[in-house]
Every structure is written in structure tokens, then in C-alpha cells.
Image (cartoon, rainbow, N blue to C red; front, side, top):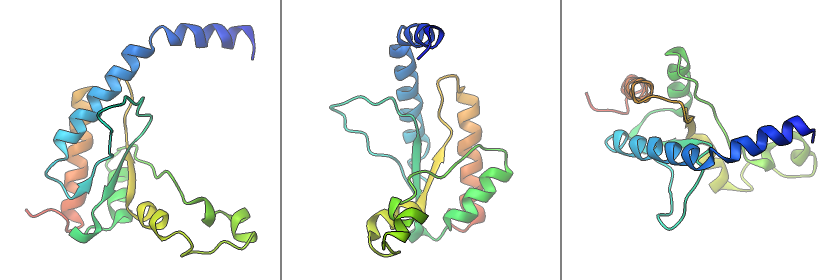
Length: 147
């Protein structure tokens, strides 16, 4: 690590508490705004804190919407969603070692429903409202929200 990188890291540590608090507040707001939608919000243990580097939801496939359709609709609406936590055993190197689809069904099921919503400390409530509105619309278009 260079001296400049160390100085930058040290200066960022001074803002860590505010950074984590803002992400926690945004996540709590997401929890409230998404409560009536057919999605599963991330579990957060009330006894602990998290920096919440991601806010991954799961599209409730029992409600009918297809995760891929919702993902594409959000992207088309200009929302920077992503997919994380691809099951390791589905990666090419692990497949060469003999791992196959179906070896870890819970990880595969989670991945088939997961979408990470934008979450960053400088996000405004207006931006968050836009994400939720686009999610609502994409779920509605996919048949997952009763109009």
C-alpha cells in the first residue's frame, strides 16, 4: 500500500460512523417502502450493525414475477440494479472439478430470485423513491402486483 492510499484510508475511517449510519437509515427506509411488495428484504439481526454494502432483495417467485424480467425492466428504467452471490459451484472452474447444477439447491434458489438494489451513502430519498417506484412498476408489469 502506498502512503497516499494509507492516508486516504485513514481519512475515510474518520467518516465511517456517518457512512454506516446513513446506509442503515436507507436500508430501514427500503424495508418500509417495500413492505407491501412481493419481495423478500434482507434479514438484519437487530443485535448487530452492518455496513450494508448491498441491499439484495428476492423477488417472490410464488407471486408470479420473473426475476429476469424485473431485472431488465429496472435496468431499462435507468435503475442500476445488479445480481450478486452467484453460486460458486456454478462457476467454470468448479464445474471442471465436478460440481453440477443441483448440488446446492438453496444457493441456486436464492440466486434465481436475487436482485441488488442501489444503496450508497449519498443516495437521496428522492432517488430511493424512484428505485421503489420503478420496482413497483416492473413487478406490476411482470404480474406480481395486484393493480
